[in-house]
Image (tube, rainbow, N blue to C red):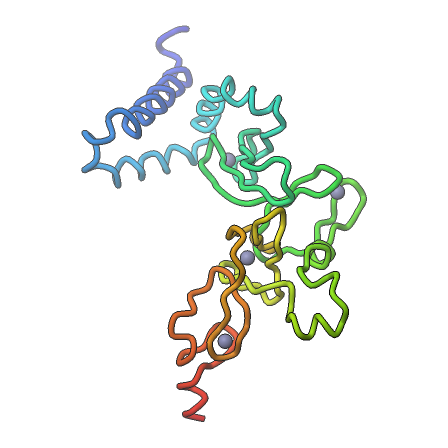
Length: 229
Ligand SMILES: [Zn+2]
Ligand SMILES: [Zn+2]
Ligand SMILES: [Zn+2]
Ligand SMILES: [Zn+2]
């Protein structure tokens, strides 16, 4: 490689930064702790550079190939490289962590095998497989009171709940494989049931209901406002 080739020098510098940055984040972390902000800014700047991302991709490709064989990698929504690692590849909703650009998000994977990012606002996916996948159908499928008679449904209350993360106007949280999961944004909460607003009794996940008797929740005004009307 001729030393005077500027592109080669730039890539060399990017590769050097990639290794240096790994060391700074790992082994040398304590030494550089005081410069964390500046270093993060520099890294952000370089990540916008496609060549830099390509360099990272080349460096991580060997590590990713094993994951790819295991069906745990998809194309990242942000950088477009095949570098998004699925944390739960067999589940309907899975987290994705990108090895190249660092983006983290959730995807929903339909029966056809295609996966789409969940953004808290998209509830229909016009899929390459020819089907219009509707999230509403899945919410009905996993609704906790789906098997109850209409009378028991009235007593039991709704079997789908509100999400405090995406604040979707629909009730989007249902239990899937033992974890309450929002099919709007992909947030997850384990197997403990919802909490209710102390004023309006609306059932929530991921929403702070402390003081809700007085101050209400996203859907109600609470006692203070009520009294002042
Ligand atoms: Zn990415
Ligand atoms: Zn499909
Ligand atoms: Zn949500
Ligand atoms: Zn409320």
